[in-house]
Length: 124
Length: 367
Image (cartoon, each protein chain N blue to C red):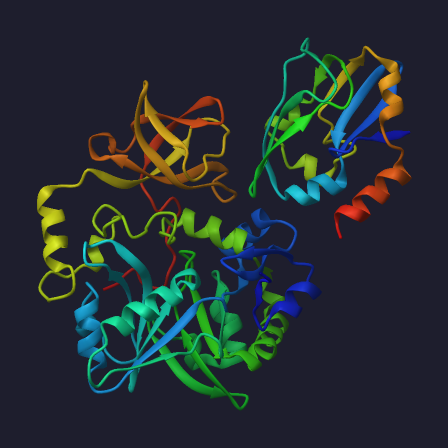
């Protein structure tokens, strides 16, 4: 089941490993994504720290990590195929996998219906 | 302040255009993907709403002499039915605006940037002479641009074969389907194309006709995002980026539009600038690495700042990050490796020639 952050990242947790990406709403707001900068595996990040930078033809935005943990894998295919984030934000466009250090932080994330309410408000 | 709407605003909404504010106008940035739109224009053709542009008509006995005095290009090089790129210069030789001048039988029509329209109108009023009449037609005029290699085939279907065979930088006025139209073979993309001036009330009619007839030719509607990508690929300047009141035509590489065998406002300053030699010059650059350099970012050689980016983009047609910049003249050699600071990092780039793509206008001749 997916969980969502206020800064429009999604999280899929499986055996203490969280796969993280940006939501469909976020990719639509950004438009054509042309460049992404992500940390190296091994990087340890605290919740809400900067995860990287995502750049669309329109603008450059900072990405934030929705959970504390250690980066264990980075989707390196995105370097040559940043458009995957537009085309397939929940699948081929995943960004990083992170080993969760504080499981209780998952509770602070939104479920899908709460997230839908949030974006409904933002787009008005 | 609420953005102004062009007569095609409803069309953009229906077509799911992503509306942004551009110089006070509500216009589509894209219809989903500006990269796809920019590719489609070089491959087939695209349709742009440029109704925000300003149209100023100069009439009366003194019109020709008046505009000759105010601008560095020589209007006598063209005849009625032809158009020409030209500039308005301030008294120090800085660029007030760049514009297209349509030489009509009874008047000169200046198509100016929307953000500069009011400024240009006051500049013209301040310098107005006897026998010159100025009419701002921006409000009642809409502009649709069709660009790309299959443009002429779509134009033939909507406006007839004769109009479709216009020469580059020529135009004609005609009544089509009981509506007044001015069409020129011109554009802002480096591809073959046509610009269609109509009365605002007729804009939705012609937009629909073009979309209808364009269907079999790969025509898609395009937003401002792709317009910007295409003009950067073609190396064309945009006011507020490559040119402004502080830049002169020579450093902007627009010296070809300055004809020193005629007299015009700021001629002495312009000649002085040329004789002194240029401190900085407009160049192109291609990033060695994947990184988008935007306006205002610094160009460096070691620790020395040697220039500044005017425009940068990702070119979907070259699959490269490109842009234009001003750089100190001594570092302007093509192929030179420099660095551009993007956020906290420095990325390598090479000075490059523009246009970055092959120019496919029907003829390259421009006076």
